[in-house]
Image (cartoon, rainbow, N blue to C red; front, top):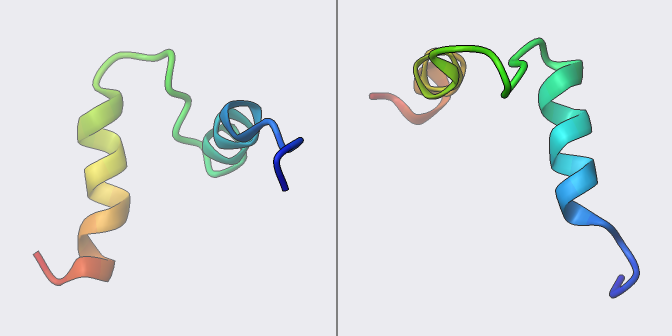
Length: 40
């Protein structure tokens, strides 16, 4: 697995899940998606 480009995978994954890391308030939007799964 040493040849896997994890950074590219992460960006692809975020885009596929409509988080769009380049837009404003990325961290806030990401936490809104994650919070229900961690019980915060």
